[in-house]
Length: 124
Image (cartoon, rainbow, N blue to C red; front, side, top):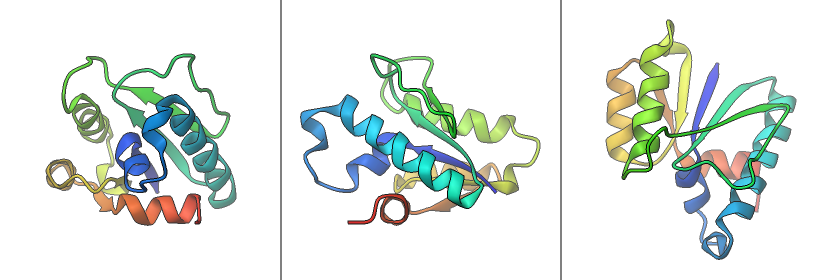
């Protein structure tokens, strides 16, 4: 199973003060996803609206961003990744964005609730 994670949607599902330092929240999510990906032997890509500065790197997770800084651009990038894959039925998208969920389901992927993924990779 390949996972594509709607990064800010997963971060935003928990009101833990992430908005005070978005870059730190992004880094923490990538770290948690990386540890989980290694344990679960999962192929994980996390998509953000804009590239974090400085860049966030991971040995276990692909960190990417939308090509344009526009509203819903991360959603568009996630849909692009799903539709470009020859086996979209093997992709699970972690998001709680209804519009994005509808789009990726129409493209053949499945959807996993953002809060549930956050609880799996970063238990409270």
